[in-house]
Image (cartoon, rainbow, N blue to C red; front, side, top):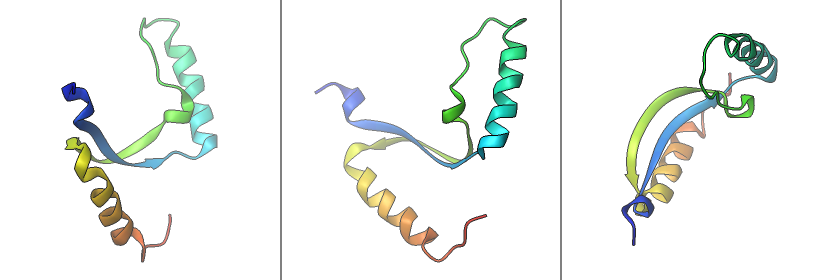
Length: 77
């Protein structure tokens, strides 16, 4: 099995509100006039809280359960 299937590159992220996505996307479009690069789609915008790196595929389910447990008693912001 290829090693790319053994690990997943993971992070904990918070989605960005749609009104901010729109403003960031407008900025991307303006920036693309003078910079040659590929930007991510606005639907993929997020704040990264913690980059977890390469996590073994067998650990993902347990990791998600642990994160869910930590967040269960927290209010959204």
